Length: 481
Image 1 (cartoon, rainbow, N blue to C red):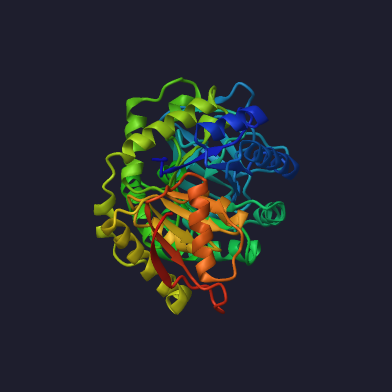
Image 2 (image 1 turned 60 degrees about the vertical axis):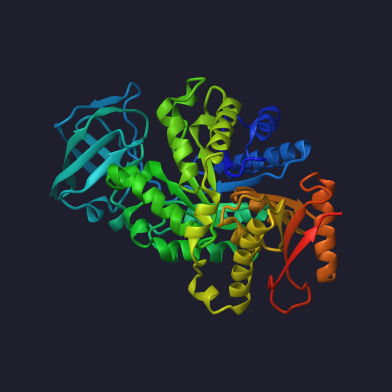
């Protein structure tokens, strides 16, 4: 049986040639991530073009996720050889002036409102969080901080300020420009960085427009955790961004937040991507650590829709091996996944405020539950969800059924967006004019592609193509001829 948990691979200098992109797809990449924090719009569009070309050449359905940079705060450059900060020493922080540099005594921070956003007792992480400071005083034109965890600082490292009081807007003005460019280019999903509240996601969705890409909320701040349900209800997908979450929250809370985010995301039928340091050692090593293997397997057991690779595929020595290794670990974990127990414990699908008043959506969610139960009763070979937007297939996916989920859709864009949803195999079919024809041609297409065979029983979810509002209101059990 095909692997159900999807793989998102970050494309970077180590992986953006046509040959390696094709190999990544062959190894199991379902969605490609383009990080927009580095490079020009032209660079990003060229990379998108190469991904699309590789998918076409391999005949695969591969989605593309564009990850917005969000509010970037950096330190002015340190000396070329770097600077080592030692535990317990004091260092000054001050807003950077033009041409400023940083050293071991004073760090110039490229944020004009630095002293407005800081309070005594605030923790500040530098770079990837390996160096951490605590503010001890605010003295006019500078803050004085004590080094809690030391280390070497190179270049212009990021400065992670307390997000609860960080005054920058999300999405930023730069993010808005990038959203326009990525929407025009036809990306399938946009990830919003440093989300703090549901209104941040709503702003990104307005910018993306109706019929635009999925908007994925990255949960990487305590504020986002505190407003989790509203954020997920507003979003089209969610990412457990464990790296920044571990910097901004207590490290010991992160595994518990991960489980909670996945649970709430699945309750709303949103794809949930678990990200950061999944196979970090494979940036340099040909094999992961035992702890990393356990981490990936546990993310599968938690119910993640997708697992994401970052540096492992963007700058790692062997990106293809990283994807292949993750695919093997996920497939093995799925053998011990409690599919029926998961579905039995799931409960009703949660709806956003606007969805809750929509009878059509309530009907669709109810029929998806009926399809899951019927598939168990008749030992169905597959559940076929006939869908325009992908919502019906995602509603079934939340049950994590034993039976494969086949999404039959007339939209190639919908097929690509479903590449990050758990267990869904999308097939593109011609648009039909009646419910009977939709069912017939969906089953025929699944059989032609070898996904079901003669004699199999399949559960088919479908609605009328002439209804004024899209409603999946028919469940049929069909024996394949």
